[in-house]
Length: 64
Image 1 (tube, helix red, strand yellow):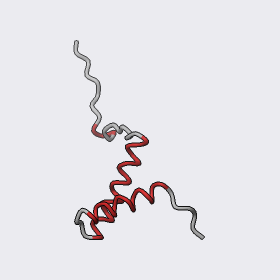
Image 2 (cartoon, rainbow, N blue to C red):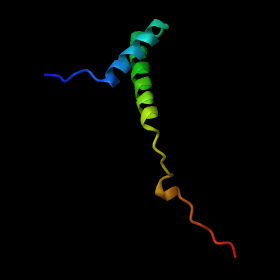
Image 3 (tube, rainbow, N blue to C red):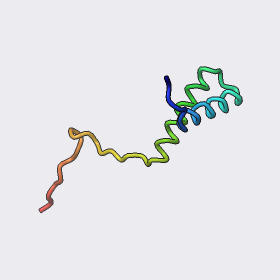
Image 4 (cartoon, rainbow, N blue to C red):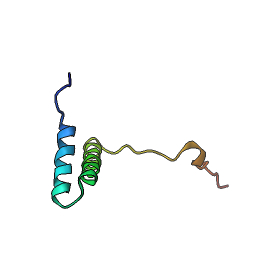
């Protein structure tokens, strides 16, 4: 048995329908809808700031 349909799924379907009505092929519209829903979810929660990977961090230099 499946659980209730969540807000994320609804947003993805609505965005996919919008993209399809604007002329995208159905497969592209589905991809667009999912990507757009992911973007909105990330924007709602706030994008996480990531620093550079450890091997790219610069050491603090002392200037005499």
